[in-house]
Image (cartoon, rainbow over all chains, first blue to last red):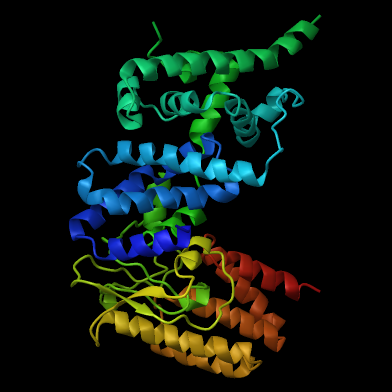
Length: 190
Length: 239
């Protein structure tokens, strides 16, 4: 179903939602919209699609609100965001097939450049592109969004051991990638 | 055994710098406002500030239940469905009270289908517009005499001004906007009326009035969905 149809349907649902659910939606929005938006970016949703994707996450939440256990809104939203990001990226991949991020050709920015948060985020996202799909979400949830491993296991509906192993694997990948960026510079030092 | 402490605290300098930069990113206020509108949450400045964790003076906002879709911003017609707060509660100060508060307690809302309206100009509210595109739009209808009716009336008045503008009658459009401002001063569609006024003045060639008004608009509503349009008008008037 097209996003506009989905939105129209869910908006109609939200308009008829109870005052309690509307308050929950508002609270969840205030508390988590920025985090969901950022999470989607770190999962590789491109800037011109991230607004739509973040809205989609909350639209899904609107319909599910009556079924979401109070206090579990955050977990629901982030779990939904993983699926939404997957869908958005899959569509994006089809549209930009063949366009690969060339990490190897991207020189390490100078410290001054890295001081620029935007450049640092671009580099971070380039690195995260090279972290395996399933492990990437675990990595971002733990390292950036501050979830614990048990929380991640719950929201991704995976065993605790799987969450821990994905975190370990993603950390190794991330550290290796960062290391590969710094080694050539260290090697060039007199 | 995996460390339970994040790399953001225990990693190398570069690792910490990268991860901290990633954690510090926030959506811009415009993103928050658009999402709030789509989700039926009134995008007042205080809500945007709270969502972004920004301290804001005089943050005073109420529970929200409705979503207004305004034809002027590309949504064709009005789908506002809640009680507006009393006129005394309306704010005319810029930014912090762009729209009238909408109170939480509402009777049941009945979505109805209506035929599509005439084509409308594109706007920045992509999702909001998309959500009402297609062969039929879902609008919420209430009993006559409610504040929602007042809003429909306001939207109709602005639609009239827009049609005059589209038909090459900026002068008549300005007269209609004067009438609108007189009747609905400080109303929830103030941004839209201002945008129309800027357009009308620009089309009339009154750069001396249009440009300052456009600049005031940008200053008062930096996160408005109309910012791009106002900037384009300003640019078109630049010699």
